[in-house]
Length: 135
Image 1 (cartoon, rainbow, N blue to C red):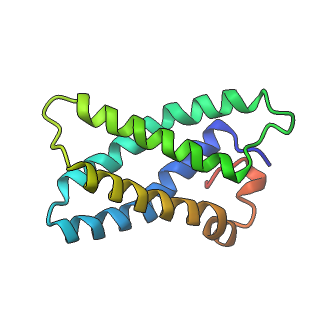
Image 2 (tube, rainbow, N blue to C red):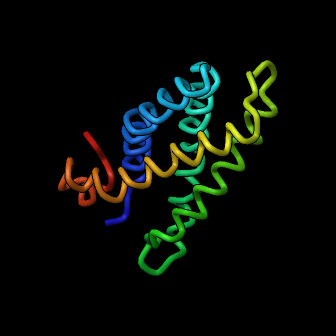
């Protein structure tokens, strides 16, 4: 089943609010700074709403109106680049080093990918059939 836009948004909030938050807090503990990683996670969540709207629109041009899982990798790369650009243009944003950003974003993305393609299907067996809606 193809996720609806509302389902994508609910899934994004749930996945990044659980797996993403756990990874971000662990990463913040390692680098000794929680503020910057949490702000980056917030940027990824908010910017993701716009990406999800774009993905939903682009899916209408595919014959099955769904993304193959391999496309999710490319979407993650583009989202990471866009998040990096956004945090660099926000005035006063506490900037991480490029290495910290890449490692943090990559870890959050991997945790989100694993949760989306395995754990969500176990926790919410009908999640796929409800267009990705959690509630």
